Every structure is written in C-alpha cells, then in structure tokens.
Amino acid sequence: MHAVQFVSTLVLVSCHQALAQSCSGFNATNGPNGPTYTSVDGSRIISKGANCPSTKDCEVEYGGYVTAGRTINISDSSYADSVFKTISSAVHLEFTEVDTYPVSNGTMGFQNGASGYVVFTPYTICTTGRLSGCDADELNGEIVQACTPDLSTLGGRISGRIGPVTIVGDDLKWLTCNPANTTQAKNGNASNSCTGTEDETDHTGTASGLGEVSLLLLSGSLLVAFVGF
Ligand SMILES: *[C@@H]1O[C@H](CO)[C@@H](O)[C@H](O)[C@H]1NC(C)=O
Ligand SMILES: *[C@@H]1O[C@H](CO)[C@@H](O)[C@H](O)[C@H]1NC(C)=O
Ligand SMILES: *[C@@H]1O[C@H](CO)[C@@H](O)[C@H](O)[C@H]1NC(C)=O
Ligand SMILES: *[C@@H]1O[C@H](CO)[C@@H](O)[C@H](O)[C@H]1NC(C)=O
Ligand SMILES: *[C@@H]1O[C@H](CO)[C@@H](O)[C@H](O)[C@H]1NC(C)=O
Image 1 (cartoon, rainbow, N blue to C red):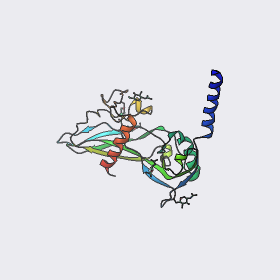
Image 2 (image 1 turned 180 degrees about the horizontal axis):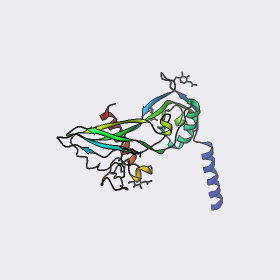
Image 3 (image 1 turned 90 degrees about the vertical axis):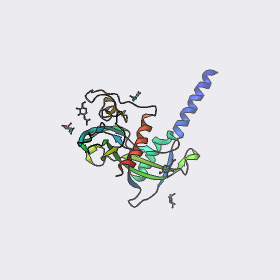
Image 4 (image 1 turned 30 degrees about the vertical axis):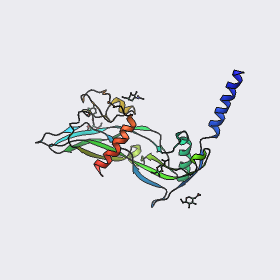
C-alpha cells in the first residue's frame, strides 16, 4: 500500500515537472533599437583600496576575475530556464549561463589625500516584455526583464567600463587586498571585500552577514550612483 502511494506520488511529481513550468509567448516592448537594449549589471570591485598620503598622488593596480550571467526578474524562478528559451527565440538573443571571466588590468591614479578603489561595471543586453501562454495562471501577463552579459566584443571577454570610486572618510581597512584577484574569485565566488596582505595568493575575501550576491548588487547600485558615468 505504501509502495503504491509512493510510486504514484513519483509519477505525479514527474508529470508536473514535464508539463508545467513554461510560457509559450513573450511580447517584447520595442524601443528605438528594436526589442533589445544595452544596460549595466552591478559594479564589482577590482582593486585593493588606495589611501594616498595628503601630500602625494598614488596609484593602484586593477584587474582580476568577475562572475556574471543571465538574469530574469520572473516571480516564479522555477520557470526561468524555460522562459529564457521562449524569450531567446522571440527576440533572437542568446542568454549566457553564469561564468567567470578575466577583466583587463592596468593601474589607476588617485589624487593626494584621496581614498578609493576601482570598479568594473559589466554591460548587459536586455529585453523587457509580457509573458503569455504560461502553465501557471499567475504568470500570464507578467512583465519581465531578461538580461545577458555583453560578450559580443573583445572575443569572448566580458565588456564593461572600468572606473574609479573615490571615498571620503573611510580608510578602506576592509579592502587591503583585491577581492577580484583571489582564488575564490577565480572560482566564481567573488566577495566585495578582502582583508589580508596583498601577496598572500589565497586570500579569502571576507563577507559580512549579508549574502554575497545581495551585498554585491547593493553596493553595485550605490557605486553606479557614486561613479556617475
Ligand atoms: C504586444 O503588445 C502590444 C502593446 O504592448 C500590443 O499592441 C500587441 O497586440 C501585442 N501583441 C500580441 C501578439 O499580443
Ligand atoms: C594579483 O595577485 C598577484 C599575486 O598575488 C599579484 O602579483 C598581482 O599584482 C595582483 N594583481 C592585481 C591586479 O591585483
Ligand atoms: C597585466 O597582465 C599582464 C598579463 O598577465 C601582465 O604581464 C602585466 O604586467 C599586467 N599589468 C598590470 C599593470 O598589472
Ligand atoms: C521586472 O523589471 C521590469 C523592468 O524594470 C519591470 O517593469 C517589471 O515590473 C519587473 N517584473 C517583476 C515581476 O518584478
Ligand atoms: C563562497 O564564499 C563564502 C564565504 O567566503 C563561503 O562561505 C562559501 O562556502 C563559498 N561558496 C562556494 C560555492 O565556494
């Protein structure tokens, strides 16, 4: 008796997974350049903190690894995979799964008396539109925005802008090494702070109580406002 119940539960579960969780339609909102447009993802820190002496300019090296991938703000994330496919065929945009990429390196100068660090802000290609033909009624009519990192230039490198963020009244003790240049960042688990000395090859970026991703995105939006490109 128990065995029979167990089997029928399994059958139900697999039917549910096979039949549900897709939307057949996506009606994109057209902008001046058609259904897709360029946007940006949250900024990532790609240097250690620079604290220039009050009498002397200073510079800091930047570079390292950033992790990025497709995003969608659908209210039921179990639909995400199949909805990416629907949107992809509707607007001819390929959505790239999360991956880790090297970013360009170099040095950035800061003025005497200034503190700051360098950020990389990935460019994304996005589309916004309305879902239809969904197996879940509550998703029909939902407006979603789907984005993917812009890999169209630089031969598979991720494109984005690199810029300085100047900070007032913070000695950047939470950024004594480059969080994008750690073993952890190389393995796709970057943090937005890094403490330790620069020449340790295996710093563990330190994270606070917030989840790493939300911390990253939160600072991302703040940084964009600060940098003001
Ligand atoms: C798509 O949306 C536009 C306006 O948002 C509407 O005029 C059009 O009828 C829709 N197309 C389909 C196929 O639903
Ligand atoms: C990355 O780390 C290596 C080894 O610790 C160091 O030599 C290099 O200067 C660092 N580069 C950047 C951009 O932080
Ligand atoms: C940038 O990376 C290249 C190759 O890894 C290295 O030769 C060069 O010294 C780096 N430049 C800086 C400023 O870190
Ligand atoms: C997703 O983002 C778009 C664009 O910002 C917004 O119009 C839409 O309401 C959002 N949808 C959900 C489900 O949060
Ligand atoms: C990512 O880093 C955090 C904090 O350093 C750690 O707790 C977590 O286990 C790491 N996750 C993975 C998948 O390595």
